[in-house]
Length: 88
Image (cartoon, rainbow, N blue to C red; front, side):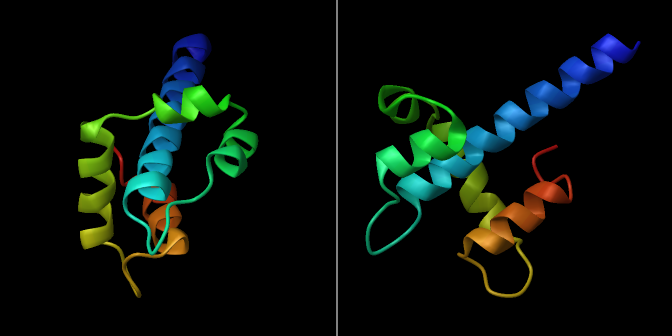
């Protein structure tokens, strides 16, 4: 049904956000993205950012980066992989 499909899209978007948060906080250097900036962009609280992802999300982001086109390790590449359905 349309409602079930909408819920699936919402759940996928939530998963994508968690993977992007994990990337931004754990896999960027020399410093992670700032909590306040991520909270604003994600529409979450700072504490929500801190607890918004798990080791599974970090591992998933790392796996996506390993298979990303062009220059691995950039936000553009990770978002391209996610947009292409990389978290499914």
